[in-house]
Length: 371
Image (cartoon, rainbow, N blue to C red; front, side, top):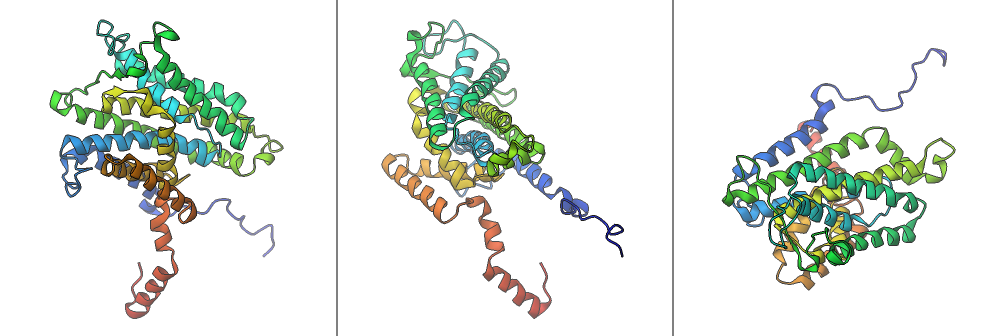
């Protein structure tokens, strides 16, 4: 047979037949449906921290979803584009304070006063504003690399928190209540918003933010944007001759990451009911880095797994903050040295390990078993 007559080699591997083709989509859908009904399914009653049958467990799960949503956007920026932008803590604060100020009643006392906007009008306005700030910062930052990029974006995050603390010294209409802190008006979902179930409303809002960011992440990374961001990360020097503007795609990553951080900050504030500038300092950035790296950098479920790990540790060690930081630091070092791809790839590594494959061969030889 001639070379011309032979069938061309496919560029991508063939898709599996039947429902296996949609296994990833079905798994993702199933996880989200399970989380929606989790408050009425007492499967986590064995752990008091994530026991969804009470408000304490639901509140912790809402924090997991909020941190996970922020880490999803952070994952797109760092894991896919390879851009070490560290302004996520400041943008998280912008989402928390922005929605609190805009949606607060105008005739309330100083700690709660705002502009009386509807919550679902304030939320997209704040998130879009954060995305615009992310893009504007991305213009100069996209030309920096490594240490210089990290310092420049870290300074932006600190600047946002500093402006929040200054309050009237910057602008009399800022209404952030300075360094004292801001009470956050609660948006209550109809049917869930009774006073004793305020946490359930915050749970659903935070879950909605996680679903939105995760679906956007899955769709975008499985299309041209995800492949191009990987090219920008791995072979940045070759993207120019190929006609790919690395600056443009880094700006897109900056904007999407900032949008997700502000959205997560707003959901965190709904669950916390109170925002203090000290919460959003460099410590929050370290927490989100732990969530991202321990969970799995560049992995779809890494942010959610890392958020579960972090919230669990924080609740267990909330009375000993120094011990919490020590264990988080050790976990971060171990993740980098021993498990660089995070906890999310641990099942695959176990499945592909030499011992598991040897066990499968022994089972097949003994009884014809084939998994």
